[in-house]
Amino acid sequence: MAEIDKVFAGSIPAFYDTLMVPMIFEAYAAATAALVAATSPRTVLETAAGSGVVTRALAPQLDADTCYVVSDLNRPMLDFAAARQGPDARIGWRQADALDLPFDDATFDVVCCQFGAMFFPDRVAGYTEARRVLKPGGRFVFCVWDRIEENAFADEVTQAVAAVFPHDPPRFLARTPHGYHDVARIRDDLRRAGFADIKIETREEVSRAASAHDAATAYCQGTPLRNEIETCDASLLQYATDLAAAAIANRHGNGPVAGKIQAHVIVAAG
View 1 (cartoon, rainbow, N blue to C red):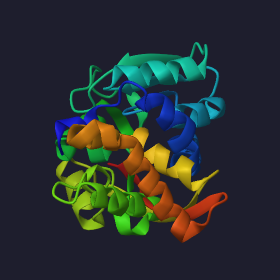
View 2: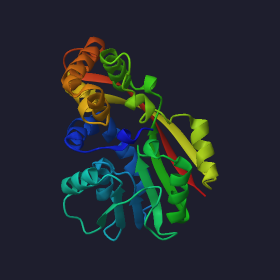
View 3: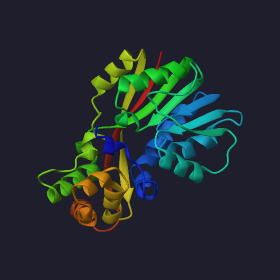
């Protein structure tokens, strides 16, 4: 993974939260929140929280005396999430690296991480840290995207943007968000981190946007794909976005659009 893949700054958090979150993240946030809340945990850690979609789904389901720590490596995203959430005495906001958590051993009943593990430079180290801070019997709940070919808009955007830069096509979406999808590899990484009880469910959902333009803008300007496009040629950002919108519209129509998304939902313990 390139360093540029981890930069969520400038206008990216706002585009990400207003366009990308409702389009692809909310359905999985509901599933993640339900899994976390199912055992009525007293202490919860969320890593790689992004703009807070899981936080907003999970907080209403937790008991009044639950301690909920929400963390992210990226300060602009964490600040955006905190501002969206509003005051809640149960929630503490902490800038933290999921590979080097600033918490004592056996602190949390549940650690959750929605669509963050793909960004870990060392997944075994990240999983080992999650296991370290879990109490005995605690659970690690997380999601990763399936391969890009199973995710319609992401695949179409990637192909469209590649046509703008044929000699150095931006591959952020395929390389990072959709680059860690092999179930056997995920199981092996979790076992190497010390987890013994591993359940993986592959879930298909429907991605929806008000228009092809909104879907293209979400991917091209609300993710680090924007950084990669601007590194190639910043003057072509809008052109690349428009070309991606045309590709989505050609496949899904000119009005509200819907396309397949697919991810793995994982619960690890032991």
